[in-house]
Amino acid sequence: MSIPEQVIRKIASAKTSLRQQLGVAIHSLATQIEKPAVRPPSTAMAKVETATPSAQEVARQIGDDWKVAAYYELAEAAMEPAWHELLFPLLKDCDFSAVLDLAAGHGRNSEYLRKYAQKIYIADINIENIEFCRRRFADDPRFEFVLCDGLTLPSIADASLTLLYCFDSMVHFDSDTVRAYLREFRRILRPGGRGLCHHSNYTAKPTGSLHDNPHWRNFMSQELFTHYCHKEGLRVIRSQLLDWGGSRFSNWGNDPLVVQNLDCVTVFERPE
Ligand SMILES: C[S@@+](CC[C@H](N)C(=O)[O-])C[C@H]1O[C@@H](n2cnc3c(N)ncnc32)[C@H](O)[C@@H]1O
Image (cartoon, rainbow, N blue to C red; front, side):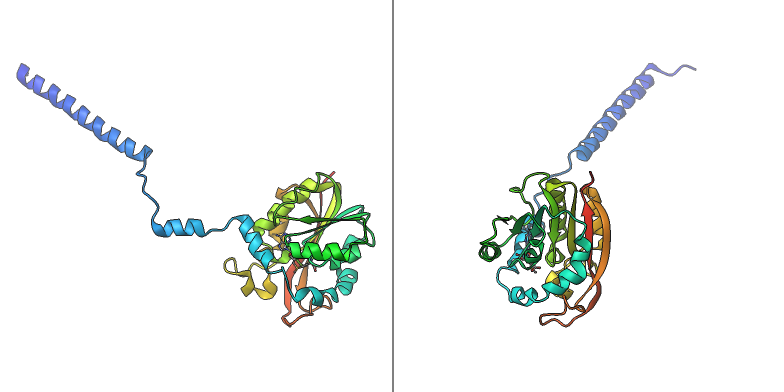
């Protein structure tokens, strides 16, 4: 039995129509996937985005804690035990030809560093501290003073330093600040040059203000610091945890709190 011509035409027409409808539907779907609807951010979203400060603003805010502080006079007296009991044993094999005291404050560390150094850079985010150190070391031509932006040290030449040093400052720095300085350290250290950083080992509160943390420690750990060193091309030579508040060099001031393993001192090297 043969199918009538009229029926064959109807089936063919229905097939064409179905193909067209399917095609339109698929094209429409594909367009939506490729070009998602652009919606203006809600007011709440926009607020969150603009409220996030830049790395430089974060560094500046933390720097502002240390423009003028009773700390400087109190800490001065704790320097002698800090140098002899903690720092010099870690530094005694280092080359002191060209040294940077980063975040130097009123220069109590530089007073000891200059016993060995041929050239010393003092860097700090606060002009008040740079001016204080300028006056303190006015009679010593080995000093150069650098007012920094809180993250970088552009006025210090590549591969020009043999020793980097940062005591009792980086413990307060944001982790982005620490990472930025490690990148700079890799640049300004000579191959074989070393660095000593006293940094935080406090990870109990990943959010919130450092002012709520013991001794104003910022979020950082021994492991994260080592990880950042590695990523920035620096090799960790030794790293030791440090209690804060219970030693002759850390139990001064008004805060009697003793915290075990709150801090860490890491010595690293720029590989040859
Ligand atoms: C607690 S004081 C320690 C000063 C000095 N290292 C000492 O042991 O006496 C912290 C210092 O870090 C400086 N500082 C804070 N943030 C900084 C940053 N991002 N870059 C450079 N200096 C910074 C402050 O101006 C201040 O001098």
